[in-house]
Length: 349
Image 1 (tube, rainbow, N blue to C red):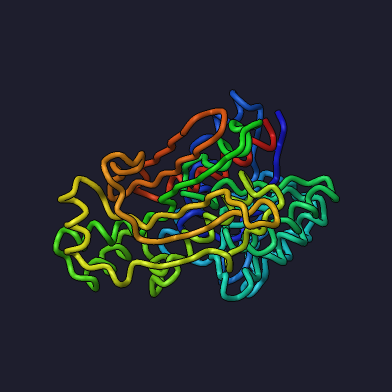
Image 2: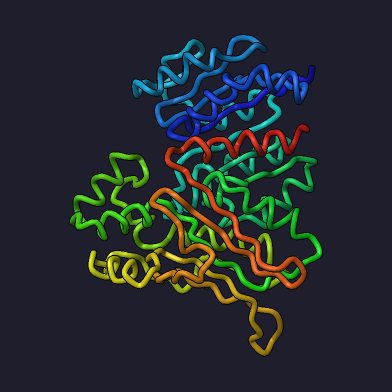
């Protein structure tokens, strides 16, 4: 049996579900993968907690605590005001699971510095946090290679959909000529409510209550989330040295959409979604990629036209494998949280 000691930074919607998954899958991990996962440190916005023994924490106890909006600093070994960097520096850590909020407007900090620190210590990193990967993906990959660590971030694109694994592993040898994606759940949820006659304010309120829209909603509604996911997907599967960055995405959100526009799309047999596209092009200087995020009517002929309110999808158009369509129905954040388990198993199995 191989024991893997992990620390988890961020125990919100994704982090706490990930901890619950590890607990629920303990027997399967042992019997199928010969792995024993021990969570030896956790961090949230209030502080940190460090396990007193190599057996790690009682994960069910952490999940119950966070479901009641408790603080990890209340746990045995808790340190109010402590920072996640202390967990990484504590020694005897194999993997950092970084699941804190994106905070792109703050330079993806403190997550970016934490991930850098872990990689430089030779600690593997798993993260569904798009911010550090969008802003410093190439740098972080270089640090991982230089220090014998692995960096995995499958959960940064389209929730639980294994789009990155398909694009980077299963499409080997191909040129991806175009990507079409609906990688953001919140916008589809809001658009469908608008089409059903719900007001903009009420649609956003319901989306927040269901946990698909956070804060003031700008990250989702203005297209930033979809743009960030598009950048990661295009960079990993089709860039080949082309400049792929957030500032190169032509971005339009959904704030100007009203219910009638949604209903017109439905009457035509289609669906209105915030579509993210990346297309290989020539700019006179060599390979280039055109990136765009814009509300688009997906007609009956489009592979993603049947997407429901809680569904996301990605379409890869390739030169040798044809057109491949991936879809996921994600009514809860569990599939997104499960990407951290998938990444962990990719490292150790």
